[in-house]
Image 1: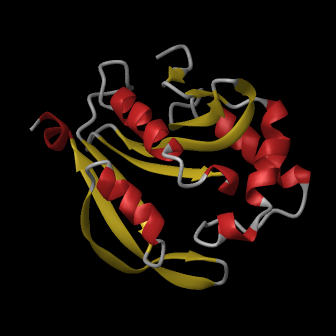
Image 2: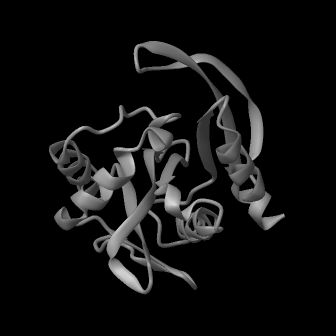
Length: 185
């Protein structure tokens, strides 16, 4: 893949991150309700958002992941969230995904729509390699994220005890997976 894969849905445009997205990223991650289950601390400065945008924008060029800025089609200059994949494992043909959305857009089916487009692309011939497995981890208490994954066809594999360490303590996470055969069967 030489060109960043922009994705369109009925309501959304999933596009490459731009430096101008820093304010929108700050607006999302400066809210405790967003970072409650997130590995990142609640942002305190625009500089933190600029650094995150730069990191996310650089994933594709290094072929270590893809992070899409999620925008409404009627305002493609304003990011309202993101989704993407990382931990690309060409040998195992697997990836891990992550996502977040501004709370003003929760419970409107936006993340379902965005992740469906992303997963369709990741399982397509246009991806870096022939993908077989998508993994997702959620904090045990994050029921909304778990319900979203199940809605998309993911299967819960179990709880990884104290798998993560962030915000000064260990966290149990739920592991989910989606296999190519789940979609084809």
